[in-house]
Image (tube, rainbow, N blue to C red; front, side):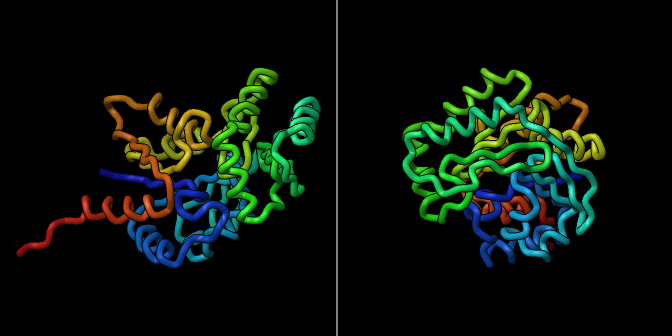
Length: 252
């Protein structure tokens, strides 16, 4: 069976907002040498460069950044989408930041990316410890989930997803990770797509990809598969096991 493997990056191939570990670099490099691999992330390319080493960026077929709103092959930018967020949305987010019960605000709360807007209450200037502290607080208080519902109710033309540890992504409906699935599947209808992500649940930024896979399944096409993971260690185990299953047995 012909296969294309697509991977989220942050929390799937790497620890959250940290570079890929040496152990994972070794395993994933070998995997990319033997398989067709495409990366798809909600982050922009500057963050991909921080997390994924150059040798792997050059090995993969391409990288969808900003949830599929930009596509890069090697050093060549193939396309970039634009998004101009409504002024009322910016005002809402500023008010939310100012009145949030979370006490730590580090700056850089809004980040404009290709085709989307990223918001963080704690701010992208936070340290790794501040990032982990906010995630723990948000897991108990559900701030990002509440803000997501507020945005969906106020702006029917927009969609919103929780990504990473500290932020949410806001974008026009359909301009999410599902567009990367439809592009790859449309160009490779005879291939099965295997996607690994750590945010496959409803509201997560991998969920649109997962949902698109389910809606696109037909009896005449290879079965696409989503693989939920919760860490880069889970992904590493999947890489090793998937190749064991397809490796031809050696004659005795």
